[in-house]
Image (cartoon, rainbow, N blue to C red; front, side):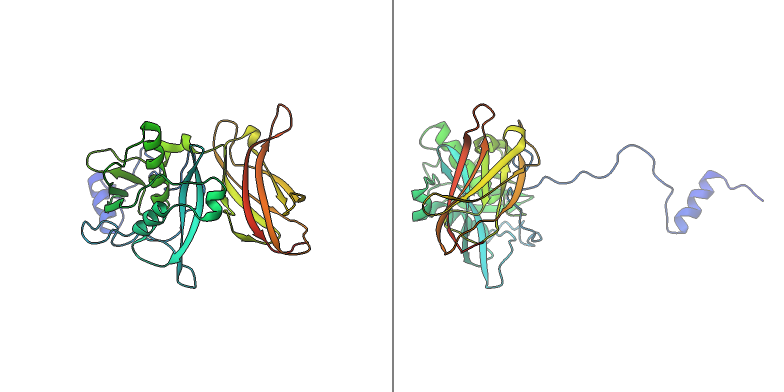
Amino acid sequence: MRRLTPPLTALLLLAAGCAPPRTGTLGPAPAGPSPTTATAPTGPPTPPPSASRSPTAGATTGTPTTAAPTGPDGTLTVQLWFARNGKLVPTRRASPATVATSRLALTELAAGPSVAETAAGLTTLVPAGTQVTRIAGGVATLLPPAGFDAGGAATARLRRAQVVWTLTQFPTVRRVAFAPADAATGRDDYADLLPPIVVTAPTIGDRVGSPVTVTGTADVYEATVSVRVLDAAGQEIGTAFTTASCGSGCRGGYRVDVRYRRPAAGPGTIEVYEVSARDGSRANLVRIPVQMAAGR
């Protein structure tokens, strides 16, 4: 049999619809950055919305839009990041569905916390009039109003963190640039503004039933996150613990179902904390006031 020369072999392979195998050490293509990464996530940080990218995400005219899922009742739930004691705290809002999700999120952020959220210590530093002018290549460009960076460096940074963490929940936004000339920043740039324990669900004022599912992220000793459920009188009616996906120097996501016993519906509190390795006390405590259904 006649031996084929290497050039002739390559031509025959191409004619057959395939190419010679590539060699090298490039490996698989790297995955793109996640809009929910905190220090190594979030989970949602929050679980991120699973919607596909909006075909208008790169538009430079008209109303900038991002893709976000809507509920069966036509409502859109967005996550808002408020501030408490110099740290970021998440909550949620359900609003009529709109394609202008970035505008909706910034409007709700500027409107500030609800009465219940205010009572729990939440506040907003974001003023009305903050606008997204363009979303392209995963970067949302903002036109902040006059005085946006007032109040000192720490306050201005926390204000920007609220905007960045709120807008990057959408799959079309990975970073945010504040016009006219600031470099784009993402969640990692403000990860130090997260408290040791973040609770993404339930949020303040939610209606919950037994078992109640508690989710969030944490950077705590040995990654151990503890939860207890209290009734209106402050009596413990349910408890559980779990481990985050990372801890003791890194942030990981956690999820735990907690069953409780309660004969009638009414107000209650979800407490999420770590047990102090020093004295066994509850450290880095996060309290979430909720409305509870009867449970057993």
